[in-house]
Length: 510
Image (tube, rainbow, N blue to C red; front, top):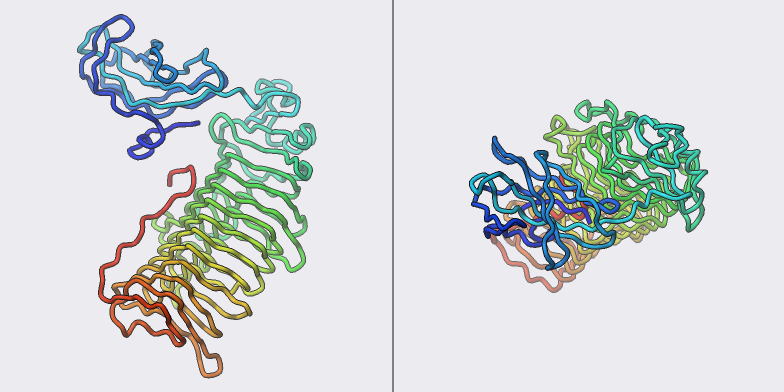
């Protein structure tokens, strides 16, 4: 477990935080109440844990670390004058508690102990015959057998072949370039894992989202199946992971990655003939993009996207992305996809004419999609804008978009909403263009002039909106404008509205 200090995170995940009691150290000396440093990180390694803390005041003479197992006796180490220290000689698999203090020659120059953090040392998994190592510049013979003879990214495909199905390629921390094509993979049920270690390796180029460019340098072009990419970071690249229609792949997992200042982070190229099967994306944070967070296209199928946080942060990139940006796209014949615990916010595109920017954009050629337990907020046009056939949207929150749920009944059966909530849209909680939809067990909350439904219909293209179970609040009864039947209506009018806070389902901090 890697533990970080934070106001909430520390209290929940890092154990006891109270360190105000003055205690004797191993020599019996009692310290005075000089302000303690804050212990920031406890990073486990093989038989050791590396600590990092805030610096003491000018004149600090040194630091002292103490650690223990459970409620046992404390052990002490002098940590010198730096603000990092590796506690070595620990037992792998044993959970330790760590604290640090300023240690001077007198009571007046010695502080109380810091907050406590916990960490469990683990054996180095990057060892053995089925492992290869990569560093930025390589080392020694560059055969990759150890970190001391690491290869470079140019050796990646050779190393994937060398470790074989179920093997591991460890990419050590550092800053890497772009332009790597992965053409080798593992086997069904035994993928090769490409994993960032010793921190998180960063793949970086010169792309700037403020230019609104839709393309740029590609970090990884994936042309092989049975792969896992884990614990990587991307900055200033056009695309993090590119999947080309000429090279359909299957059974690829992208997990625990962070991206910032990109065009499109995950981009499956559009095609009417290609299928990508079993693509999993989980625990991902994507910030400051111009074109999109995740584009699923061609025949992406039997795939899962879960625990993702996507925020354009337009104020950080000049106010908007490209003309038609999308948080998550479902294009072409994408089918049998589950989207779960996705947070998608602030997708902002063209500002003239009809403004653009959707949290989700789905075409009628896509089908059989489930969106659940998710949160969309502040997107310029639709929070969820979908024509997808047989799409179920449930237990999802949409807030502060122009139209929160845009349900195009272009195909039968079309998208439907159940057990979901809508807050403060600028125009309508729902949108319809044609056909019939029935929303079930939905809550709508608005204190502005937003209508229940914004219609774009005609006598030749009529719309019918039904609701079974409707609760919440609208400004007044004139905003309840369903054209069909409404049953189980417990709406009240003119109430104040509080939008639920933004969830972050990832292990990263925005």
